[in-house]
Image (cartoon, rainbow, N blue to C red):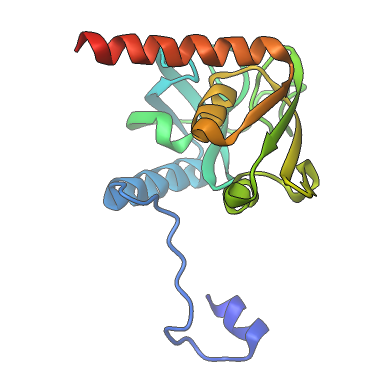
Length: 205
């Protein structure tokens, strides 16, 4: 805040507020998690926690924390994972039951991924081409880089190259009928299957 005040040549007033907690989240828990992880990084203390991966599978991890990273509206911990014997990015929102041990370490073991700031994902990349109507443009600019979005006469065309993860399907289904999948066609078929499964679920409950 002091640096921002110097840049804009104004005193510390109420003209700006920075809050990294999510809407509807337990801000107190998230702030405490941030404080604990910051302490673990600065004091070089091994940590133990439960972690939920992108498939929803939980596992107990032990890690040597290196730094905290804020990217794409989310906080991540960059740490050496003792389970995989390699560096990993752990998303804050998936870290549960964090415990700072009394074990200290001097340095992170050297690996090829030590300087990586990207989540680890070895799944093949797919090229997505999508079309959207004009009324969802604000949501596209909230979620995607400008370079992925092309404005057209009838709305927007989006081109993305991403690993095929659950995020892609969650992203597409969040637009309901406001998205058209141009390619690949098999993604469209998987979306249809997911909608049919959801429909059957609600018919049975």
